[in-house]
Length: 617
Image (cartoon, rainbow, N blue to C red; front, top):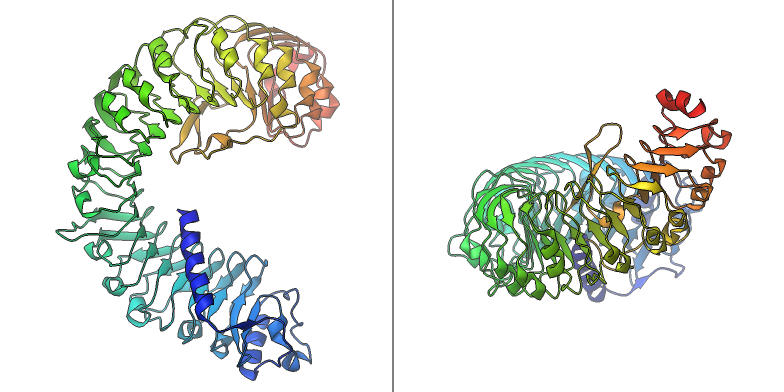
């Protein structure tokens, strides 16, 4: 959403540039007296000077050329300031009322600074102002209800602390607006009826506020609106669209307070590509107009109360690439017809415990499938599941946690997952040992077999995986020594960790067995998992290798609750990125090395206080 929004704003700004007269940024023109007053007042409101500008009290301020100052552009004929752009300049202070003197200003961009306080009313009365970007500051207060900016086309005041109602008269006086962004503020109340006059509006974003009531029908029928972001508010219902047709391409109503079924109105959205309604209390099934949509590419309905069978007409949904139905109450089996969605790249059916049976054989025919999460369902026959999924040539992330209870990883040598970068089969009471076919997963970056009943030794070939940065084998019954090869993992020594493609928007859940066992850490992107080696709660013996100190990129080393012996190597201080080091509940002897006692990076001590006695004696 952010990338698309930036593209919209960029297109509009470029268009404005082409339409405007030639601008000057370096000619030696004397500042217009009104502009001098405006700039002087602006500078006086700041708490520190702007690099490249005259000091506040300079005697030559009035006769200098402000047109060659950083962030200022002037009109080639009049010499008047038409652009003031100072994003990311670490500006602090407030904006003064002197902006009324900059009455030829067309573009104002003070985004990504630390400016505070209310905005002066005079800012909303500049007749030529076309683009206003004040996003990501600390502005507060109330916007005037009747903003009088007749030339305004782009207004972005997101990520501030504005409150009260949205300005009702905005599109009455500013009829040419294309982009309105009010996201991440404290606006409350309802969407003003006057927004129905925004006939040129293409993008409206009021997400992450405290807006409530019913989402009005007129928003869907604005003639040029293509992107509508209403998520993270308190809306309780949505009006029907009747026989009208909408031009919307993206609609996000997620994280609100809907308690109803999904409206069956998607036949009125022939261009809708992205629809997200996750994290509400929607119930019932998938309406026919949605399950037959030709235009939908990305659909997110996770974290609701939807039930019944999963029923999509993939013969009609020819553009579907991402489907997220996690955390609902769908029942029955995974439909084999999903394989007809040939463009499907990301599929999340996790946390639907009433889904049962096996992964359909037809999933062999999903050539684009890259991300698959089926955790916490009621699936069985792990051996068949893996034999089916190995035929998905682009499968990158596979999450099967909390399924296949008491089964065993198949020992077949011929299983191949050449593209797999993340494999998670945790909390399933799996038995047996780590199978030999895992050796072929040379692209693996993340491996999690935690909370199972697996036995045998940890294979040393895991240390040969050049990209492996996250290994969790905790809460099993692995025995023998820790493979010394794990101290040679390249991604934990010097390599940069990166996936070629971004992870899907749906979250991955990881249960960490820290002090509060069972606490949940959520990572929306696979790459947000911290570099980790967790071998805790096993039956491992032998020493803690001094070479672990070479793992400069490692954030978490958890070896607690084993039967490791010997001393704690002082070389562990070489793990310069370490945040958690837990060696407690072992059979270690000697003292804690001074280099670890004074280790500044640690968030937890290497041996819990209750275990120091055992470590020493």
